[in-house]
Image (cartoon, rainbow, N blue to C red; front, side):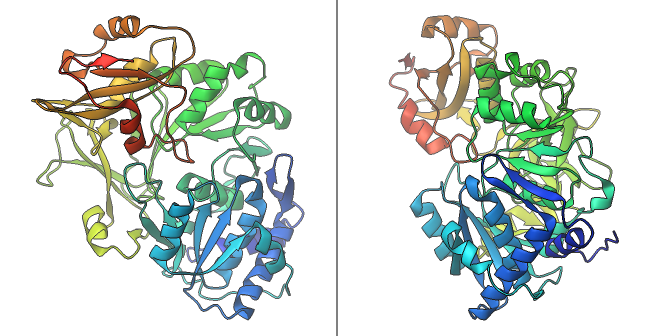
Length: 489
């Protein structure tokens, strides 16, 4: 299979269909599967339908699907791109206001959903290739919006297809790779690209539950598993590794956030034959990423950048004046993409603030050790400035996760009349524990200014559809720091 540097993902689908028409591309558990041949044919039919309906190159098309509909979504996405239009992936699990905002923000002229996708894909299958130039805008995906209104991140065909090459035999150690990422997220889009250029078929499920996820691993002998930290925590809390055989898994990839060290250690025990890898990237930075095999010697690191020019991109820590930071010095994390950079759609001011000369400001604070390994201190917006101290919410959360009774934990800064902000924590328990016991446990692990002034026990944490904690809702849940000494409930 010949692959050149001008490849686009719809072209890649056509090439795989020409050589592997009968090979399964995507499997949705309990729903169905699709081959490369059928995917290619239905994508062409969808593209033809959009052209016949009068859509012009560059028109924005919203794709609103649920996780049961991964096959129809994949067909529609490739069809939209082949018609020269711009795909706007959205999850039907998002709040209606979020979907309305995205559609209005980028000027959507057509919406495709489960009910309309079948009709579009039933058209003439004559190939359609319109506007597939590498430099053309192909997709606008909206960030998860955990701290505010989501922004649209635009990506060209060249950006999306960077590094895609089925000749490499990516993930070739099994017949299936498994994920349960939602449509409309950057993690989900990465799995869609994997479906096009990896050797095994993609295997996904309509809704993540630990038991069902574990059964799929065992049933299909999945060799690669992708998840986010919240899913890893749920798997460990459910103890599914004690009832299911995970011996087939050779690669376990975690993305969207770093695994707390205690969770990473638990996953190593649950998946004894797997190499566990943290992937550090963002919707804005992709395809730039930092990947690191979880190392007991560096349990808190998220990885080390590859050398300049290699796939993965470059990494820098910068001081407030923009100068490179010294090893061990905390500063802003920047990644340089090896592909054409992304941008914020319709927001030049935000684009200029985040994207500079191929570099992307990650919004994280971190530092490099003497060997070039990256350690995240916190999200820049989440750091708690308490009096003269700066508190890392990640560090406090990691300490809480070490307690055997804590299933999940999230930390945020609460307003304080004297100190400005103090630490507040919400925890979900898997076993009985009192606030006093938990505070005693934290005394040996956290400095006085890091100790939670307010500690609340909740049934569940407020999360978005990718499993990230939504900080504004978390603050409402924790409530105010009532007194300088705080209290628990």
